[in-house]
Amino acid sequence: QRNPVAKLLLFGATGDLAQRMLLPSLYNLHADGLLAPGLTITGSARSDLDDAGYRKFAREALDHYLPDDRKQAKTIASFLDRLSYQPADLSDEKTYQPLADKVGDVSGGLAIFLSTAPSLFEPAVKGLAAVGLAGDTVRIGLEKPLGYDLASSREINDTVARVFPEDRIFRIDHYLGKETVQNILALRFGNSFFEPVWNARGIDNVQITVAETVGLEDRASYYDGAGALRDMVANHMLQLVALIAMEPPARFDTSAIRDEKAKVFRSLRQMKPEEVPHNTVIGQYLGGAVNGAIVKGYDEELGRDSNTETFVAVKAHVDNWRWQGVPFYLRTGKRMTARRSEIAIQFKPVPHSMFAGRGGLLQPNMLIIRLQPEEYIQLLVMAKEPGLDRDGIRLREVPLNLSLDAEFAGTRRRIAYERLLLDLIEGDQTLFVRRDEVEAQWTWIDAIRAGWTANDMKPKHYPAGTWGPSAAIALTERDGVTWQDD
Ligand code: BG6
Image (cartoon, rainbow, N blue to C red; front, side):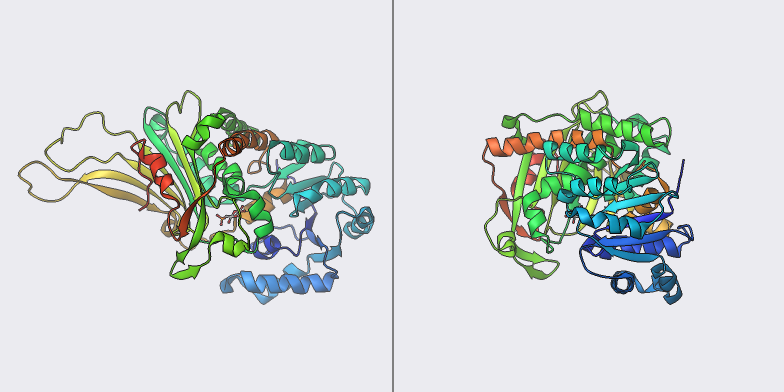
């Protein structure tokens, strides 16, 4: 199934993502012997650099972003040998022929990675096709955002589809490159004891939190036009929902997995405008203290007033047989108390407590899948507290712990892009997002945004360093559910 290409062409090669993630990831793949010896990497961006200039740029990026124990001078030198550079202005037709000349023969396969603004996708694919860089041996990777609503994402997809067939388009959602996210599949489908309770009979609710402590991070022009719903829920968080909610695929193969995820997206309950205020909460951070540091509020950081949400909480439903009546509570925000991505699955309480009146209160079991910063799985169970209580036995909730960090200590924690770049180079689409997935995601997201507009909903303020506006707490409390906050 794997079919490695001989060349990689990286657009956006001097951008922030390239420096922080892509170059270090490619270096790690190189250092681990995972790239074919002959694989060459051509970087391209607007900056006027030559090969030597780009190698210097890459060296600095590696120096800055690689941990010290990964920096081996000889390995860095041999990695830089793979790199070359061609300046390009993707909006200019004349840019493409010199690019094609630089890349040269693509009969051994070429993978292109477009880490650029989506407004450049259209001229890029047209220009590439015009100079023969889009034939059968060429595949293309697309970085988000893939549009800002259904219509714009369709436009992007249509544009790219005029040049590349779906089986050569690799849409990136970097959450799918994370080990802990792939581990959800291992946990659910590599073990027998979760599946019988993994449904509305066994599960009361699912909570997914992706909390960040960072704020705008020099991304004002993108972020203020996007907001938390589009930036995080429309892609990463919905992928997590899909992995939790999907039916067992018959095989670990590309279509089997993507088919099941797509079915989940299509089963998301579409909100009517009047239901949106009841099922969503939006927030925007004010100044406050995060991890002991005083930070500015969003408007101040931005330099103007804005109604963009930096926090969103949503009560979602997957309308199918398995999940009927089980709320999926999602929340994500910037400038929150702590950086934490986690899925908490709360099981149904026992049907009858024989301990009633004769011991501690029974807490329903909870499975916690911590994705970051730590990587662990915790099952909260009731256990007997040691002691000679005369009125019964005292129970307490205790965690059954599996620390993936400890269990696999000594294994380097990889950057999500290592997996994705390797799969792009080798042509495995399993961890990339198919067109119908993206479009089903936007369909659901658009309905929420339409509800915000129809109801003139504005973000509620929350102080930086908190878990978001209090309304987000009310969102679950009125269902008798409390967010899992340690
Ligand atoms: C990106 C978003 O897709 O994911 C960012 O655009 C966000 O706003 C980032 O900070 C979070 O990724 P991670 O891997 O740090 O959880």
